[in-house]
Length: 147
Image 1 (cartoon, rainbow, N blue to C red):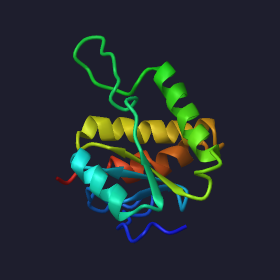
Image 2: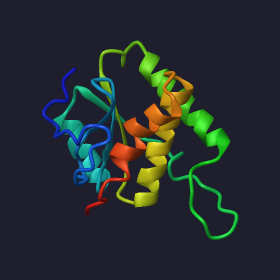
Image 3: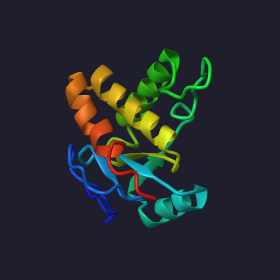
Image 4: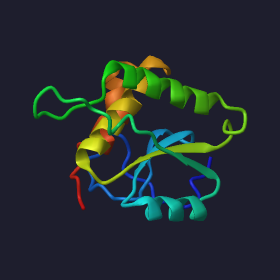
């Protein structure tokens, strides 16, 4: 599948500079991740790349802290996210499109989004935890966070 000339980020495990707006392939040609500066940035990406299906959710932003810590969403949020991605991957009108999950600039939200994508890979696609981490966390959020 084409990415309509959206710049691709580094391969999984590559420690290159993170670039806002690049696609970070989670499942090549089928599921990618992107970080957008704003809703206007997302709208522009949708207009410029109509063959891609951009989506997001609140799960990567939903964390109920115990005290003053930050972290990933709760178990219900993880399961809800995985179901949502599976439904989209299986949806008849989306099965031939590359899906792009996006988050904003906040590094915590970006990290949580990578965690959720990794959870999807493990829970639905049969990846080992190590493979899920390599495909998401290592290549999306542990990079030099850049701007």
